Structures are given as C-alpha cells and as structure tokens.
Image 1 (tube, one colour):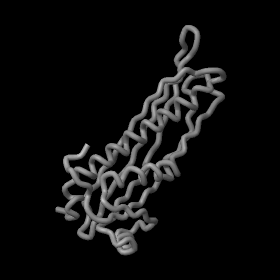
Image 2 (cartoon, rainbow, N blue to C red; image 1 turned 135 degrees about the vertical axis):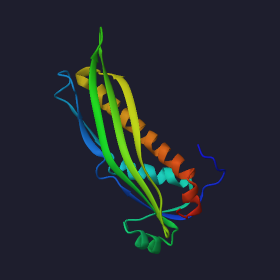
Image 3 (cartoon, helix red, strand yellow; image 1 turned 180 degrees about the vertical axis):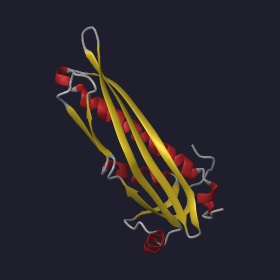
Image 4 (tube, helix red, strand yellow; image 1 turned 30 degrees about the vertical axis):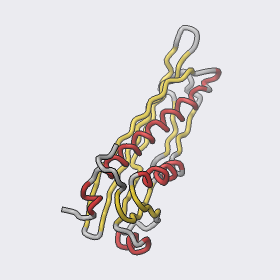
Length: 179
C-alpha cells in the first residue's frame, strides 16, 4: 500500500546482497531428525527484488557497485538503494497427531535497506519478515520440504512487501533530498 498514486520518480541504482540468506533446517525433535532441509535465497531473493522494485520505482538499474558515487555515475541515477540480507533463521517442529504428524515451520528473514543520494543518506531501516507453514509430515518426513519452502516464501514475500511500502511512502526518497 502506498499513499501516492505514482511511482518514486527517476532512475535508481540497486545493489542486492543475499550471501547470508541461506541456512539448513533440522527438526527440533527426535522425529525426522535424520532429515535436513536447505533454504538458499542467494539467487532467489535478488530475483524477487528485481520483480518487486519496478512496482514502486519508475526506473531501476541493478548494479554491482557498492560505492554511492560510482553506482550513481555508472547508472546515471539519482541514488543507490542497497538491500542487504542480514539473517535467515528457521525452526522445524514435528507435532504428532492421532493418525499422522504435522510439520510446523517458522522462518524469519532480516533485511537491511539503505538509500543514499547525492546529498547523503535518504533512508535506512531494518526489515523483518516472518513465514509460517503447517503441513502433514507424510511418509518419511517428506512433507518437511513442502513446509520449509512455503514458510520461506512467505517470509520473503512479507519482507519485500514491507520494503516496497516503506520506500514508496518515503518523502525523502521521493524528493531525493536528505534533511
């Protein structure tokens, strides 16, 4: 949701760092403890950012430059938006039922976002996204992978929505001027 009817004006360079957004999930219980479930957003998170930001920013150029002046110069942009994956945590719990068991997964993703323009820092905030999934464990804990995937995607969707909303509603980012 945005308070504005138009996108953030101008061309913006975007740098996405997702190296820390991977982990391996193991059961907290003895049940299914032989299974591990990897979560790796090192490629998927940048791809999702590429799909999300054009919804709220007029022109987006992705860059590898981490220096604000270099990024602005190479992309001829108003500023640099840095989106850095800070942490990915997941918990998997098996809940026994009468006939079957369920897998409950909680995933938390932390992402730091800064926006710098020619006049300095325009925006800086840390965002947390939370995902939850509850699936039948299935034969040999096969439902664990589905639950982990669903919770991880939920956490990513949650954090990207918050980032897009806060950027779109930031007067300082829209104006390109710090205080």
